[in-house]
Image (cartoon, rainbow, N blue to C red):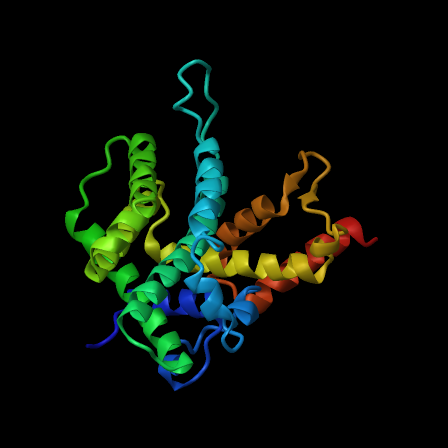
Length: 285
């Protein structure tokens, strides 16, 4: 089957997530190259197998839930007891991409458990099977969403409804896993259909997600390079004396949006260069 453009984008995101190499993804990942900070740990010989198999110790659902709470706080219209402010659309996109990160990891864990229950594979075969299975669920979820989608009437309510749909399905994992391996595939597809619906109703369609995901992964690397792990990195930036300090996420997404509108999608090098200049001007004078 010929791979669609959406399928290629999904494979790129998955490669960014786990840094797989080889002929299996060579053609469709020509534009990829973002190194994820977890890649060495998860795909270092047999180490990642132990992590994926011990699902209770590495449960990406809790991480997803934490980002979902932040997503909900970006638009507090649901707080009926107070006057809500305007939605923070830039932060909603940031949190959406963070959720994407953990949802891909969780889906891969599901795929590992499903495949390992069926047969013993070599590490290389298992890597390929986990990635291709995850990509299948992501793309099938997108197709399902495109087929069943309806006109958007109340985006704030519909975004939260889709988010709750993801959470309900994620946390039904244990019972369905005991029923059948096919149930895991069905669950994964349903999760991704709801997740893509979240993006659609907040005005963040699939074709824009990859660029922001790439930008956020560059930010993660930039933070590490500049002392985030030793707490010397400054996350709050005030790039103009007339503006309040905002987290680096905010400035990156705003810059990325302007760049796409005026010049086009930036490369990884463009993003890192802009961050380095902005950060140096503010903190390394």
